[in-house]
Image (cartoon, rainbow, N blue to C red):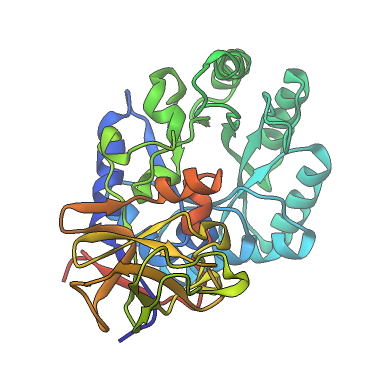
Length: 373
């Protein structure tokens, strides 16, 4: 038995990408965001599945991620979106990655280093329309950056992009404001530099606003079957790709009043049987789920009781349990007719589903299913 394992359905990732591609307007393409180890699903295998599903570009945050993708997928287009130091830029250029460019200082660095590499680096100029992070916020400065890139033989103006801050909010007002601000510059850039790829939409904007599709969308959370609105992925025709498993390692009879776990945060309300699952916050099952989550065992829901520890959790199996040691336990995923979503855990923890899957630790082996023979 394996104490904890994450089962990743690569077929689900492929189908989610195909479903997103089907929704795109005009000639828009899909960029699959596979940073942070594919949101915990495994970067390279997720990238392979995304490409099979129709993705045209793979996006990462770090130069080391770009290098890992290039080693495994030599023919893929890779886009590095995040901040890069001079040393990290060397790694990204060595991986033949396209680069997000946000100001004049970084433009000079990229041009100098690209020239040393002997080729023209494809860059995407970022316009800060309201996220408040990377990118110039003045349209004239953005246009000036595009002009400087286009005039430099060491650079190739591949894209113009922005990042939407509130696309998953119920109120679309600020997203509409960002899109209006972006569109005013888009028209000028397209006129001056035909062929530049314009992109703005994340998963939420892709699903809610076709006007945000432009030439490409950048989808992360949705390709893994997670709902960008934090509700039910099925409502968006998405298939969750990750299931988190453990098993019942031991059972113990409890008398009424006996306690389980650090701090005695739970005491048996009656005589019962408690099961021990060898999974805990060291595996990414957060301590905040103490007395607040469930496990699926034998097709039924059982409450997690007592403090979630680093390596173990305990579940109340009831006085006459139908399951015993060795039984499979699902912490995220489906078992028979029952299911536990990453969104369910996120709601309990008052966080987002991204953080749930990204938080599954490296000591949990990923087991891949649903891939072509």
